[in-house]
Length: 155
Image 1 (tube, helix red, strand yellow):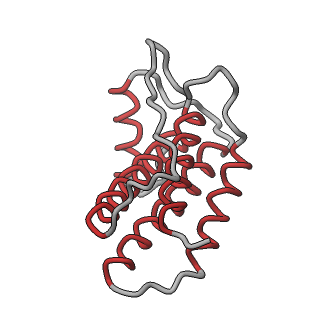
Image 2 (cartoon, one colour):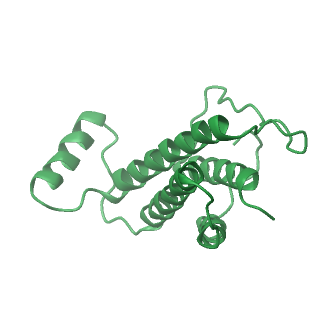
Image 3 (tube, one colour):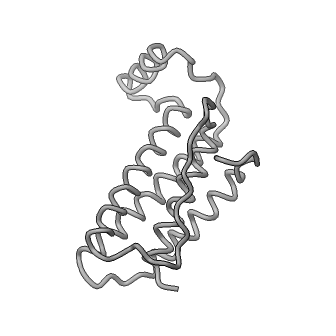
């Protein structure tokens, strides 16, 4: 995140995502294009809740820092029919959520004008040679979900 404050707790982020999913559950779409937008948002909600759950899971052994060793460990688990490492799954689901949010935004831009004056411009985020934690990345994705949801969910 761009400020020095700590990211919101995973429990808080999970509640925010659940609230948005609850709002989506009440939507009656008017056509297939709207249904596609809300399907992507709902898939992003599911993926974010999964990322949060895996990030919060108790891990017995950390995922190796070496990318090659981590890849072999995860590939071996998948090959053996086992669940991959929780940290890898958190990243997997976070990436899936970000892909779904990008797809929802793309469809939304094609479907309606989202350049409304009542929304502040998105703050630019840059990492000045610092690395964000997974919790910070999840918080950024939840903020993006909230931004897109505000644009399409009627008040």
